Amino acid sequence: MTLLGFAIVALAAYWSLRLIARAAAWALGSRYRAFRQLAGRFHGVYETRGLSDSPIVSFPRGEDLVRVGLAPASARTPGVVSTRVVVRFRRGIPFRLDLLPASSPRARQASQGTETVATGDREFDGAFAVRANDPDMARDFLAADVRWSIHNLGLLVRPGGLSLAVSPERLLAQIDRDLSDDPEALFAAVAETMAVYDGLKAGVRRRIGEGVRILEGDGRPDPAEGPPVCQVCGEPVVEGDAVVCRNCGAPHHRDCWEFVGSCSIYGCGGKVGRPVSAATLRPAAPAPPPP
Ligand SMILES: [Zn+2]
Ligand SMILES: [Zn+2]
Image (tube, rainbow, N blue to C red):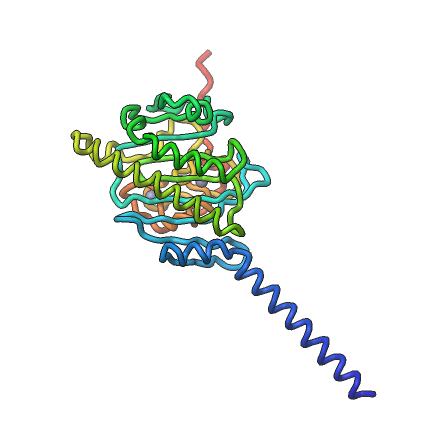
C-alpha cells in the first residue's frame, strides 16, 4: 500500500517535471523560433534577454550592423507588438526620410527641415506619405526596385502597418505585426529591408559622388521642436520608461535604448543610459506673454 502510494507520487512528480520542461522549451525555443532561424540564415547572433524580453538577432551588413527584434505595444500601436529591423550606420549619412502610411495622423505633421516627396508612382504615392530633407535624393532612393521592396514589406502586415525612417544614424523598418512565430514572414521582412538598405547606400554613394558632405549637423534633437523624440523609433518620448544618454543627454524609450544597445546619436557612442521618467523630459511650458 505504502509502495503504491510512493509509486503514484513518483509518477506524478515525473509527469509534472516533464510538463515544466516542455513549457520551458516552448518559452525559450519554439516561441521565438523565427528569430532562431533568422540568426542561422543570416549567420547572425541570437541574443536572449531573459524570459520576459524578446530576443534580438544581429548581423553585419557591409560596414553596418543590423538588429532585428520586437517592439512592445505603444500608444501608437495599442495592443500590437511590432517587428523592427534597424540598420545602424558606422558612418553617418546626410539624409533624413520618413515614410508613413498615408492614413497615419503623423503623415500630416510637418517636421522641421523636411518636405513632402512624390515619386510619381500613383499607387505608391497613394499608399505612403514620404517626407525627406533632400527630395532629389529621396526620389533617387525610391526607385522602382526599392518601391517594390517597400510594397512587399507592406504585404506582410495589415494596410497602414508599415513605416520606414532614415536618419543620419540608422534605417528603421517597423512592421506592426509580431513575426516571431512566422519564420518565412520574418525572413521576408529582413530580406526586403536589406534590399531597401542596399538602395539607400547606393543612392548615398551617388550623392556623395556629387559632392554632398557625409554628415551635416550632429543629428541632435532641436529642443524647440516640441516633445523630445526618440532617435531610434522617431516617436515622442511622452510616457513610460525613458532613458537619457549619460554622454550627450539624448532621450530614448528604455526599450529602444536596449534594442540598439547604445546611444543612437551619430558619433556619440554612449553606452550608459540614465533612467528618467518620461514626464520630466517634457519641455517646459512656454512662458505666458507679458501683460
Ligand atoms: Zn523609441
Ligand atoms: Zn549619446
